[in-house]
Amino acid sequence: METAAFCQDEAAILQRCRRGSREAFEAVVNRYMKDAYRIALGLVGNHEDAMELSQEAFYRAYLNIRLLKGDRQFFPWFYQILRNLCFTHLRRMRLRRTSALPENEGQEFIAAQGDWFDPDAVTERTELKQALWQAMGKLSDKHREVILLRHFQNLSYDQIAKVMFCNKGTVMSRLYHARKQLRELLDKEKGGSWS
Amino acid sequence: MTCKDYKDLLMGYLDGELSQEQKQDLEKHLQTCSDCRQELEGFRKLIAITDEVTLREPEDKLWDQYWGGIYNRLERSLGWMLFGIAAIALLLYGGFEAVKTLVNDPTIGFMLKIGICALIGGLAILFVSVLRERLFFWSHDRYKDVRR
Ligand SMILES: [Zn+2]
Image 1 (cartoon, each protein chain N blue to C red):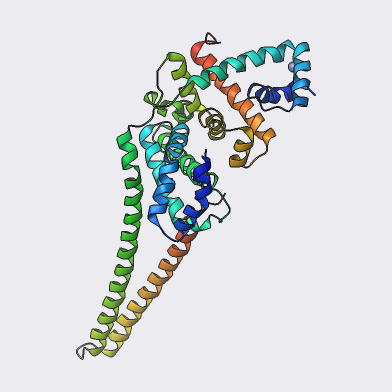
Image 2 (image 1 turned 135 degrees about the vertical axis):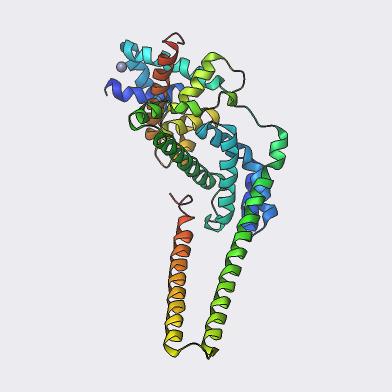
């Protein structure tokens, strides 16, 4: 998540941000925008929302930058803003979709929520990769988050534990349940032929 | 330890995150438990597939425009703030002028003057009260995504 050179300067750059420098904040944005976008994409599943939500997260981070203590890194703090925005967005979307449907169909629709995971977000589309991506969309938010951090951000358990505010044991057990569910979803989709 | 306890360790095993002790412990269990061995292979395949999935990167053009999207938000919020302050100032001024004209108008009866003044005063108090509540709410609400 960070390169050594930027890390050394980061404290100084953040200090300038706290004094209201937009140029300094632009440097922070340029450093982290791709990570932010990828995380948002993994959580909400489509390009447009990922762009919008990651930009909104940076905007809110700038407004609140004084809350970030001098000795702390930007990204773990920023990550909380981003994930909360994404989760709120998903909650709202689910609510809107459910309320737009007749009452008894609502439940079914929640189960099919992976549908909004845009197939185009994945490169080299094979059937199996596509099925996995759709399955990710059907996981619960926390399960999707842990898969995303492990596989798409390549974080270690220690790093995951740090950003999810839990211990390594919880990371492991959450990963177990998330992956187990992914396997079940793939089995359902591909009839067990994938493994 | 039961199989259920070992399930979590399977993850650490596949991700290379176990301590030497945990690893030996699990490997010993795997030798005797075909159930967990089967699980391990299933997860190994899943992880292989998951690692193969890569997400599409937006075009460079979009990265060039990225900061612009944030800058626009910053500018717009400043715009709204100025707009809000100006609107309040104008309303206060308008209210004050209205009361002044009313009080100086000899054609309006005394009781009516008091009535209209009370009406305007009441409205002003309500307005300030609502505004204060909104500002209080806003200043707390906007931190809700920051603090856990
Ligand atoms: Zn076992």
